[in-house]
Length: 299
Image (cartoon, rainbow, N blue to C red):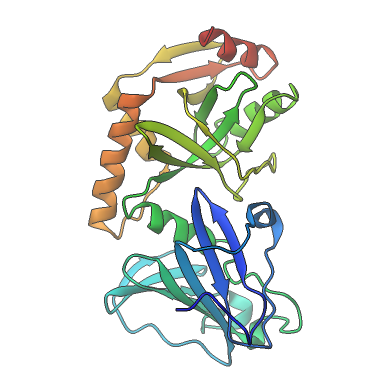
């Protein structure tokens, strides 16, 4: 697939988690546009890690392979030869998918079919609109690159990086706003963080997939401490064993359960990072003292 495109619309290039994506089209009637927080992740054209091509169609090819995962009315994942096919549907558009995305086995090349009758074809389109961009990222990371977690990432003004993990209602957005009020830290994301190892150090990256606080940054920072959030009557920290930390990390991770190799890699990756970074449970009171308490642990 050639990233150069002289006949269709201007291609999109964006980078998330140090993975560069190029979206192109040969369809002159399709206008590509990054939308929402993805605009903060746009980069200049260069050699991409992932090449994607999009096009309008009157209908999208039916799924013929084994169904690997079914998210109900929103999307399904099928085996397609050696690769994969995502089908996206919605009740207003009937039983046929409004979009499909086929990928090779490594998720490094793909074709996106957009059913013309389901879109305003005279308007710009972001072919990877959520959840496709995140689904692609989760599967890419499981190819030996890293993992995505439910987390708040904070790059403090002193250079320290704090990762706060938890499912919905654990307090990530609340904690994010407490740090944001200090003005000096950089909030990478208040809900989705990408983790990758580089030079024997754990790094966290912001993503476009924010939470209630709507905070998203394309920056990265090393991780110095990992905290699993819980509400409490006072601010207190309890260190966790590596086994306990791995189990909690797994519960907060986005894992491609259809892939045995992806599961094996993710589990090994989480074990590796708990050996590299201290992990603890953080019970906190939702006021400014929580930030001071976390900073005091690093003093």
